[in-house]
Image (cartoon, rainbow, N blue to C red; front, side, top):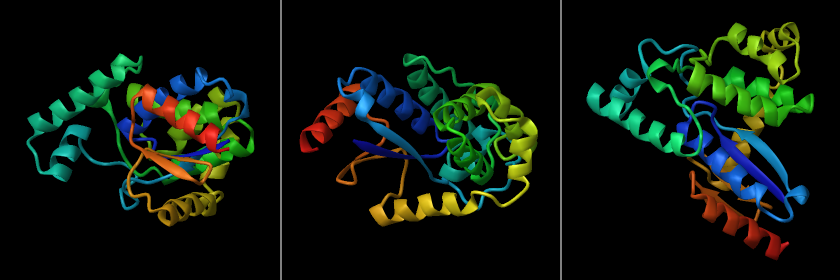
Length: 211
């Protein structure tokens, strides 16, 4: 079974969806026969490398709500994340353009450490105030998932894996995907959003039955 997962590394629901899906997969009897492929998706391809101001201010502007309402939105999603063991510190988050982060994840896949890299980058952004658009900061994370910092920085300073990111995004468009997280099972059906663990478990069973 092949499961493709489109997500963005600064999407709070993507990290929640990742953890819920992984929980369902861990209890799936045929989990060793499942191939998980992480696909790139940019929530804002036009974003600057580093957004000025706080995430609360960014959300307030984007959704035309007050800073207090934006802070409550972040508090709500942080509470949901905490229920599954994720520690969000969105008051310190440093959002920005994620194109380079996605290129780094493709580089990690080429080195056989894609899953570790995806987890580490998300953890760093949501919990440790990683400036996600900063190439040097991304490169400093790389040794933690088995890639040398200088190797990562050299790759990021090139245009390597740009085509891979664009190919993922084109594939998403082909499937009609406009929001993330989005999970595609064997190219036959999709699950949208950070669904409950039971929903992912049911989807795994359905895909297995169809296979």
